[in-house]
Every structure is written in structure tokens, then in C-alpha cells.
Length: 484
Image (cartoon, rainbow, N blue to C red):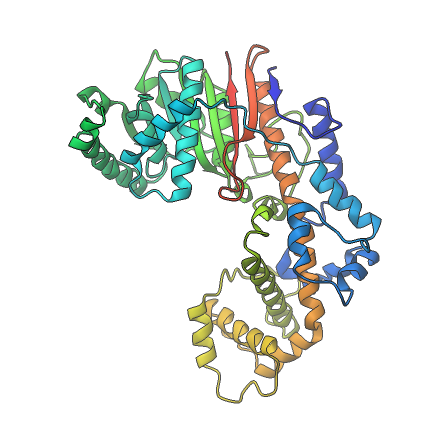
């Protein structure tokens, strides 16, 4: 079993010790990340919280804006009860201290940045940074592991694949994606990139194109899952039978990340470099599943998170302080959605234990259309918030194509039943839930790191660290495993 290089929180010596503690703490507070915000009022979730927590957040002088600093720094004022402080401390203390362990050669980095100009077509600024950083890391690992083929899984439009194949790294790449449409788009952009690299500007900058470069990148359509991850090894061997090869992926979604790791574990791949995302699409154990995305390792065996908790792991609380207006608006949207569900249950439009329909984001256009459909004076004497909820309810039900429409009086009565306290409760509960997100992400990362270590010899190397700025790219953790 390989050693795992990861900076543990203070007080922990081994990854196994840390894994045992986060499992214990998660079990203690699992009801918070597993809260479903839509059911908040129907289930009476607020009343399940400790009474002293309720009183703290319901105090007349409590400001919603203080939840932003609570989420980003763990700050609580002196009135906060010790049990609440204990929860917040645990959520912050147990987060992994990700740190970049990739040494930076400034000259090589600047050269790489100059080269990227030829590959930036259609890339967002965020994607440009991610591709620049990850391509350098993949190239470094490939060199250390003496790999002459990279299998890029979930390659999409081929952004990373093209940089790896055509920049000075010059790595042969097999780009794998499940979508024929994505493959077609990637091949189209590939032709444009080659044309640019053959142009006068590239030549003037010292870039020498030769026909051999054009053969470095191949595309294939393949649906990769946990049940057929061995296809990746078969494809690698068919592409370069005698080559040492490695796997990589940039923001491989949900179980695709688990499948990439499984492909590494069960094959002769020399290395893997993976930035996972979309934890909400990870599968967990059930009687019907032959293979699951979590847990993968023996060290986390028997751990159950739940789909709501995995969705919570996608929360980016590091962004809340940077976008206060957007965060406060999100609190209000959650409040309105939960109120609508409560109203539908109260009016017998859905069972209290029924599955809430997915509304998604109600756009300004949809809200304006709903407003235009309300007869003048129909809402009567109401506050601005009561009026806005009535408009939201009509817009959401229209979006759902639901036959029932509440009266304005029913909407206002529902809002008044919960009033301003309801918004405060929703915002506080959502913040408490979101605080557990980084811990759940740590559980997934540790599980995957342990799994990789279990499938490497003692001579191998397994790392997990932050590769991107978490504010720009919330899913910023990279997993790296090298067998020799």
C-alpha cells in the first residue's frame, strides 16, 4: 500500500486516524447536510434543531448578513451557545488543509502561458486557468512515470487534450467522451487549432509544426461506467500496445471520476491525475448496485452519506462573502420554494411525503409573465415580500405546467403564517447545512485517496491537493497516483 501525501488537520498523524474521526463526526451531524430545503416547513425541520440554536438565530437583533461570515470564516458572536460553537469548530477544524505540492518553474510556466494563446478558442477564463494548470501537472507526472500515452477521460470539447498533444509537452493523447456531438465539436476545434499552429504567427514565435504532431491526438466515443471501466485499458492497449500509459480527467462528473480511479486500480496504468466534480452524481451502495462510486476504499467501508449530503458537498461557501447580494437572494429563493411546497401540501395538491417537483431557477422573464397575468388589485393590501411570493408561486406552477393555481389570498396567508422568521430560519438552516459541505468533500477525497493507495505498492505515491483557486473553481482538488 502506498503512502498518502495530504496535509491533515492539526492533531492527526495518519490518514486512517483522520478517516475514523470524520466518519464519527459526520454520523453525529448527518441530519444537517441531509436536510431537503424544499421540505423544510412540511417536515418541521427547524423544530428538530437544539432549542438554544433556534433562539440564537431568531433573536430580534440577528442579521442575515452575519451568516455570510459564519459560512466563510466560522465567525459567531458572543451570544452563540457552546453547542453551536462546537458544531462550527468541528466543521472548520476537520477540513483538509489542501496545499499545492507541485513545484513551479517560473520560466517554464511563462513559456506555457505563451503557448496557450493558440488553444484558447472558445475557452472561458476559468477553463483557461484550469487547463493551463492541469496540463502542466499531467505533463510532469507523465515525465516522472515515463508515460508515452495519456488517456483523457470525459474529454468533452478536447481543451485539455489539445494542449497536451500539441503544445511543447508533446504527449500522445487518446481523448475519450461518451457524446458523439462532443467528439465532433472537439475534432472541429482541433482542425482550427492545427491551422493556427501552422500559421505565420506561430512560426514567428518559434513554433515548429511537423506532420508527426497531427498524429498525437485521437478521439473516440465510449460510454465509461463503473461496470465497464476496463474498456479504458483495452482502448489504451489498442492505441499504443507497448506504451506505458496514464489516465487523466478534468472535472470528470460524479461516478465517471470513480470509474477512472477503478480503471487505474484494475489495470496496468502507470499513473492517474484527476480533478473530480459533481459529487451529487456519485452512487452509493444499494442491493441493486453491482458497483458504486462511494465508498471505494476498505478504509471507508460501511460509510453512507446520502444524496442530499452529496449535493451539500457541491456548495461553495468560499464564494458567499465575495457575492453577498447573490447569496442573500439565494436564501430568499429557497424560502419561496419551501413555502410553495408547504402551500401545495396544505391545499392537498401533493402528499406530505410525496416527491417535490423540481422547479429549478425561476427566471425574471417567467416572473414578469406571472406578474402580467395577475389582475389589477387581485393581491390587495400586502407587503412587497408577500406580493413577490404570490408572483413566484404562480410563475413556478406555470413552469411546472401544474393545473392548480392558488389564489392571491392563499399565497399571502401562507407567507404570513411563517413571516420574516421563516426566511431567517431557512437562511440559518441552509448555512448550517452548507458548513458540512467541505467535510463531506473531504470524506470523498479521503475515500478515493485510500482506494488509490490500496491499489499501489509501497513504492507508489498518492497525493491530494488544491490545484485551482477555490473561489474561481470550487471543485479544485486534484488526486494524483503513481505506481513507480
